[in-house]
Image (cartoon, rainbow, N blue to C red):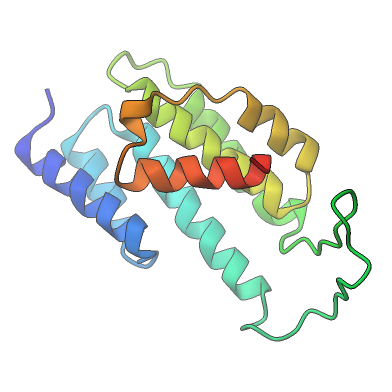
Length: 164
């Protein structure tokens, strides 16, 4: 049974993720896990997502032009500059894969699906598109899980990575 405190922290965590308040995520995620013993998957997913966003923002160089010319792009070939190196996200991948291995019966399947979207984003950011698509193709979102809130955001990210 989830406590009222854990429920409120889950809402606060979702709000911070929706608003992109990545600096607040570590404290909220750890507090959520403290008050919900089955909250490890959400905690790890939120922590990885915050780190991934911060790494992506830093590597973008503060909005400076990246020197890519798109004039020769077409539907079959699009010039793409990966924002992150594989080595940068390797610890994040290990953290997410560990969270997905959690055998706790109290973890809702939707949380694991959302974790898979963040895992796919890690691969996407490094240009490993084949692995990204493998993960996204296997997602089985329940319409009720993505009707609103941050679940909808993750669903849309998965659709964007899939290109549909």
